[in-house]
Amino acid sequence: MTCYEETKPLIRGRVWRFGDDVNTDLIIPGKYKLSITDLDELSKHAMEGLLPDFAERFRRGDLIVAGKNFGCGSSREQAPLVLKHLGVGAVIAKSFARIFYRNAINIGLPAAECKNVDQIREGDLLEVDLKAGLVRNVTKGERYRITPIHPDLLKILAHGGLINYVKKYGRLPWQ
Image (cartoon, rainbow, N blue to C red; front, side):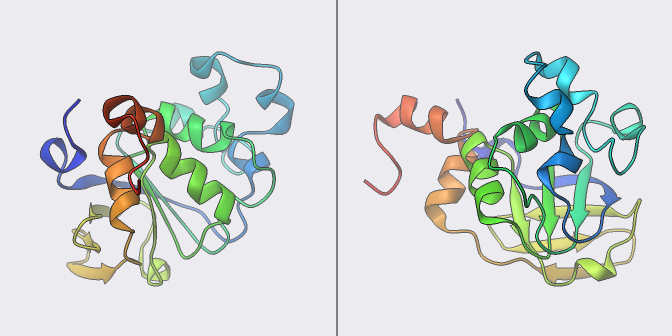
């Protein structure tokens, strides 16, 4: 498997904008996450609590931009997993629930904190450079800093998640 930096130096996509406190039951409603195991089927229900036709209108590579505390609620991996399966290029939020953030990184879904998300609008085109710590709003011609992501976490993302990293190297990045 090639590295993230080699194959995808920039994450580029159209913005879907959400507010604060988007919990895991809004990302994938609880009535589905335990009864449906097929990710294709489960992904059809992503974000439907906030936007019922989200999965139908979403295009692979689009980005989710949200306010503070994105992914609060239960610790189940299905929430970041359905977003990754749907093809979300990255989730950019003012802040994340810690367990969602680590689950996202561990499955290879880029997640980054940015204090300037209030300046980003639905439909804006963004370029995200995780390594450089920058978001470029192509639509507005603006740039925003993201909270630096630890190099070990970037390595996990570079390999599509923690399991892929361990399969390749037989150890965790910090060992």
